[in-house]
Image (cartoon, rainbow, N blue to C red; front, side, top):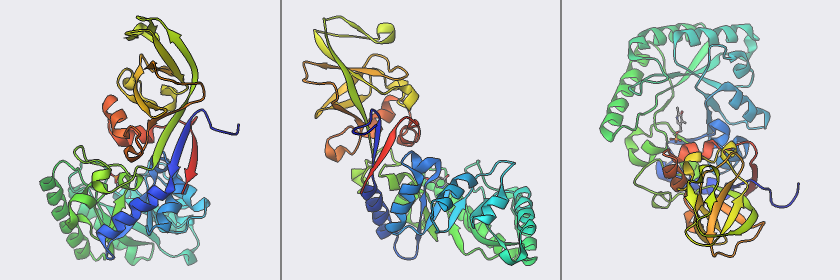
Amino acid sequence: MSGQPLRLAAIDLGAVRHNVAAVKALVGDDTQVMAVVKANGYGHGAVEVARAAVSAGATWLGVADIDEAVRLREAGLTEPILAWLHGTEATFDVALRHGIDVGVSSVAQLDAVAGAAQRRDAAAGAARVQLKVDTGLGRNGAAEGQWAAVFARAAQLQSAGVIEVVGLFSHLSNANDDEDRQQLSRLDDAVARARGAGLDPAIIHLAATAATLRLPETRLSLVRLGIGMYGLSPFDDRTSADLGLRPAMRLEGRVIAVKRVEADSGVSYGYTYRTAAASTLALVGLGYADGVPRLGSNRAPAWIDGQVYRVSGRIAMDQFVVDVHDGDVAVGDRVVLFGDPADGYPAVEQWAEAAETINYEIVTRIGPRFERRYTS
Ligand SMILES: *Cc1c(COP(=O)(O)O)cnc(C)c1O
């Protein structure tokens, strides 16, 4: 179908470039920027965002799993890529074949990477590994009690020419600045212990967007920039504009029917909404199957023709209704759920608040029926 799609995620790659350039300017020349494009670029399209980020100065790409990394390679991206989350069936052979750095959190994973390295042509050289340590998040990464074993095994495999430990990293809890500073000092300790074991990881990293912006001492060799690259704030108390960032996604639907109803008309399943007066109802062709959260029912905003209304009644699988009162709305009109507030659109955070979640979840959950269109 040509023309305007029923479900549109309009992605502004100019905003992505602006955000990367802003963070690059902030962190300075001694710190590299890794563009984190896991989960299909937080719903924005991994390949397109990665290209835009690289053109604006990002020198690394970061993803959760190896399949995501391979897709970037297959799209022609040649920058260094780190993948840090692996299931037990992880295909390290594939990672090595595509020149992907693997983040490793255990001796078992080290051995699996070593096995993959030994299966390939000796001329291919050592497998590039970055060791992930848990400094307090309690999630992925080697627990402190395992550091000695992981570092010893890594040093042994490195001396044998099987792997090369190029980096060491961790991830913060963002619980508060004090906790994050304690994690930084535990990371320093891990680096010292890795050196003591005979390793010399060149790339040390810790900060994602929040710490990059708020705790300069955590910037180290590189920062892993996710949400901020998409122009969104990781903080409850600061907006995109406060941070000098531009939201890259505008999420649109269409008015697909309009009807005039009497006062006290029930709207959508369960009649959780009734019109207060004779009203015009606009039907929008988006629903929870598209990732539009049902918790937004009767709460979340919808922009139509320059006016911001509220979702009226329950959001259904494929559609929801907006009571536009006496507004002049026609079939085919654009409906913007969220975009850049600087353009007058609701902020994604309003949807996040309505759905009792965070902006990260709203953009990453965008469903496959959305068509993504890119502008630069
Ligand atoms: C997702 C992720 C990031 C990016 O986090 P943002 O808060 O989006 O910047 C960085 N590092 C790791 C390990 C991650 O999983």
